[in-house]
Image 1: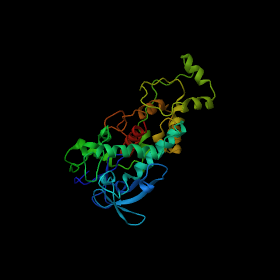
Image 2: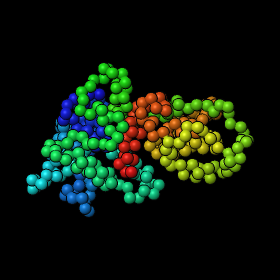
Image 3: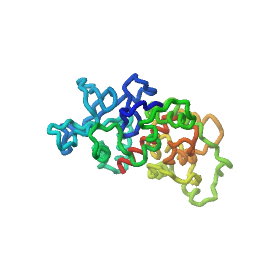
Length: 320
């Protein structure tokens, strides 16, 4: 990873660099940008626009619609000395905005009807205002309360992979595409462990016995109430059959950020062996909010999935 100069522009959602396509860009998705802005530059009763753009260096972007060069995060939009104020454009990666929309959709399914991209815009604009106090030049990065969960330390520094093994590993997960993830299901399933000792056919725990006598549809309804499952204890209860946890994992009901597992690959994993897999433990491990941090909970996860969970968490913070 190289963030080569002070004028590198950073995504206001994930904190990663927005590169000019083809310019020392380690991952193509880092060069796919969108500018958020308001029609007529007014906050009230105006549409929120998403404009595809190409970074031309620092805060300067070329709009795809008309090849116009515009300035993102321009502090002139707030200056009392500028009469004809330019529109405020806030830059993001296209994939980061896609994840933000998924978070909103997931939350709306749980009743958070007021959440929208306008909510995200308002928070990002507030961060722009807070970060641009006494500043007369366009901003290239915003203050984020949690330092973008690790990426903040890379902003504005020049660093080449190979100089530090820990930094190299950490940088790889920040650069990894959070949407297109190769080998996703296979790598997630590689963390499965067997239940040892096996579950008894007739559990002695009264609650477990009652639950296991219920129709699968009722158990499925109960599992849906766990949406989203966040930071549960890692100690399994084994109150319901592993198949219910497996189904919840495949459906994405308990882990909405992981809703694109290959259902057929999961079924084959279950049927290819007589082993009774501990799907409950896997779900509990994946549900840890720090799953994106290297060395936490599970080691064998795709870098892109770690990055997706980090970005999902950042959007959750924005909407909180």
